[in-house]
Length: 485
Image 1 (cartoon, rainbow, N blue to C red):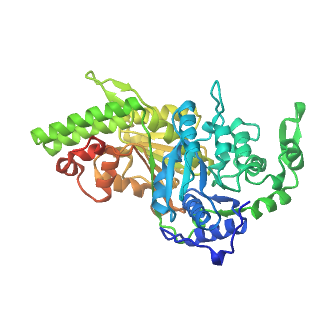
Image 2: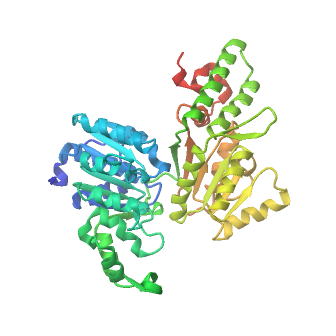
C-alpha cells in the first residue's frame, strides 16, 4: 500500500502553472490518499490535474505505472497533454487496434523492466474487456501489469453496473493503490448512476453489491421490480459522494480564459493514411517542379482536407467515402458534451461532411438544425431561433462559410470544428457566434485534427494569421512531415 506524505513535504515542480481551482483539486485528492473523483466540467482542466497527480505520485508515492481508460474522443488527447503538462519523465503507450494488437503490445510491456519514469498505458473502455479466442485477455494482462494509478476519463461510461466494461473496470481498479474518476457528468439519468463509478473508485463507500445498493437508494416497481420509480436516502448518498469528490463548473473558475481551445487528435485508418500520403506526395512534387500559383495550391489543399474527413470526389464529382475516423471521434465527443447539458455548434467545410454528420444526428435521435448554403435566406432566422430557444434542439450544424457571420448562437457553449476551410475570416467570425453578449459560460472550441496533416497546417496558419497557400509554397513538406526532404 502506498504511503502518502503531508502536502508540505511533497516534491514536485509544475511544468505548467495550474489554475487556483486545479490546485484545490490536487489538495482534495491528496487528502483522499489518491482515490477520488474529479467531477469537473469539460474545459476546466481535469486532465492536467490527473497528470500532475501522477507526477506527484512518481516523486513521492512510488507511482510508476499509470493506466488511463478513456473514450475515443480523448484517446489521442492524453499523449499530447502528458507531454505538455507532466513534471515527471514519462513514456506513453496507446493500446489501439484490435484485441490481438493490444495483447501483443501489453505482452511486450510486461516483459520490459520497470523504468525510472512514469509509464502510461492508454486504452478505450471497450478495449479493457474484449477477449481473444485463446489465451489471456486484455483485462487479465492489465491486472498482471498491476497499475499503481488507474484513471477513468469520462467515468460516466462505467455507470451501468451490469455492463462488461463497468465490471472489468471494477476488477482492474480494486487491485490498484490509487484511482481517479474524471467526469463533468457523474449523474446523467438518476443518482444511482454513481454506483458503477464508485465501485471502481472505492468499494467501501457503497459496497460491491449492486442489488443491495439499488434497494437502499432506489424505489422500484413494475414487473420483477425492474422499473425505477424514485429515490430514497438521497442525503446520505449525496454526503458520501461529496466526501470523495472535487466538484466544479466552468462558470465557477474565475481565472479561466473566456475562450478555450482543445485540439482533438483523430487517427485515420491505414487505408486513409495511404490515400493521404499519395496525394500529399503528388502535391509536393507538383509545387516543387512547377512553382504552382497560390490560387491553384488552395484548390488542391481542399482535396487533402477532404481526405482527412474520409472522402474524395471522383472524376464524375461523386462522393466516395472510405473512412469514418473523424466522424466517430466527433460523435463520441458530442455524446459527452450533451451529457453535460451543453448545446453544441458544429462547423464543417464540406457539404459531404454536413450530410454525414446530419445523418448520424438523425440516427441517434439528437435534436438539431442544419444551416448550409442550400438553405433559403428566409428560413435561416427560424433555424437559428430554434437552436437559441428550444431545449430539445441540442446541436447547430453549419457549413462554416454560411454560419460564421450575422447570427447569434450564444445558446451554445461548445464549438466543434470538424473540417476547416482556408478563409481566416470564416474561422475568426465563427468563434464570435457563441462568444458574444448573451453568453453566460466560457466557450470551448474543439478542433478535430489528424496529426501531421493538412489539418495541422491549417490551424497553425490561422492561429498565426498567415495565408496557408504561402506556408505550403514556402515548405510543401509541411503537408506530411513523415515524407521527409
